[in-house]
Image (cartoon, rainbow, N blue to C red):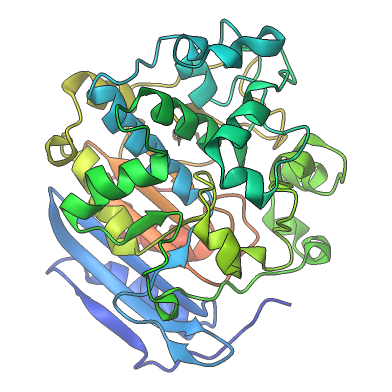
Length: 410
């Protein structure tokens, strides 16, 4: 069972700017209710940090406190970090969203994928959520070996007709495109580290370097797969059905690498932390994710985003011809350029120009161009909601609706 701990009221640190006390109140309430083991939330507005809070335990077993520099794996919240890094590469002219993937990667054209555009791939429309054969961690650590597996896949549906969540694979496809177009031949993790994280001073990694003190990384408190049956009411019905099918696309799309079982705490293993899984093993602080999104929400000058790319990130998604029912998750989803976009049942930000990605267990990061907000929430106690975990939603509601007077969040 997921650990439940009582967090002492004084085990909370950080500060908020004047007028942002409601976020602190919501964060304190989460800790007091026993909803958290350890967590952090941060907000940048117009380039200025206005919320930076942390509390609880980075390790609920040893009771080691969450520190200001504690980092944690944020699962699919990593997708937004990867997508924003990809947007920087597009802004530099390395790639175009409307080019064919095979223009940069000829081998990708195998099995009828020659006309797939970068935009379609990033919108989860390419039909490549599962891999056969499944790569191992050794394959993942070798970009050439991984690239051959990725290129060999046949689409699971007609490209552009449907979309389905590429839970793990999307980041590897993005990374290979960057590696093939970057003059230095870097993967997305290296490109992020050298071109963005280092200049901005971000504690944000895809592939955790050996020189990072592992005591800074929070322990994930993971529930076991059978516990899903005790929490079906917390999941959309369609997703619950998909998640419980052991041979369906949902199970096959999350079951990679082959030697990484997401249900047994594998993401706490150092060999998993060290390789690049750009859809699911980003490790960082809430502060850094919020700052990164905050740069995009205010025009992207600090990271070199072009005006055209900034407009594209804020634009409505181009839906697949077959509608928004997700072939993997079995619910309605909305994707564009590697990000999730708002829906009535998942309304985030002040308008539909917002973009971000939620992560397995409850984390979330997003940019809201209309208010200049970059927001991030991370935690180490994994919840059961597909999106809008009540802990995160309470913080987002306090900020967007309670403080900024924007539309109610869902």
